Length: 237
Image (cartoon, rainbow, N blue to C red; front, side):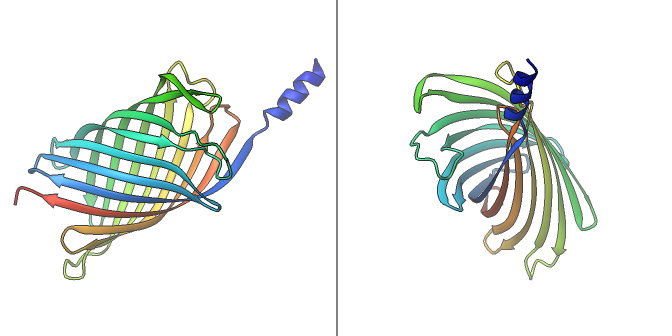
């Protein structure tokens, strides 16, 4: 029995897999008026050492401003998950549907603005077995809290605003299908956001993504280069 416990302890020893990725995002927002807005986002997430597609995602969100500080909203996302291993030969692609609701609060002090975002997601993952999709979906809940800091480096509209951004987000799992990974992942980002003419902006940064897998003792430690293009369409001029 002592030998059995020793072997089990060795098998369940903490395992961390290092990975390198790049995320490329197009972010389109539409401002209908001072209260209502919408956002559409398309993201391609790829391993680059070696190269392999990891995830493709599309998101949509409708938001309503309760006040100058509080904004609430909801929407959904669809994900297509490729294997988590960049050297995998598997062709399996697993769809996921993800409706969500959220609220955010922002306050500004001098050149610095601080944002708190609270989001609840219901994740519906397509069932799969032996490298093939099978009927049905399994669902879990996920609770997300993100705090973000924006520091305005350049506050001159003639030179275009330049911001330094720092965010930290904690994601927690819940539901009957969650056994060993109540902690889902933690994401820390550092980026530069630069405004361009015609309501365009670009953002380049680094994201550290530390994720616990369903086994409980296996983790992904991901180093991610992020690149995003933003465009805002204003309809209430």
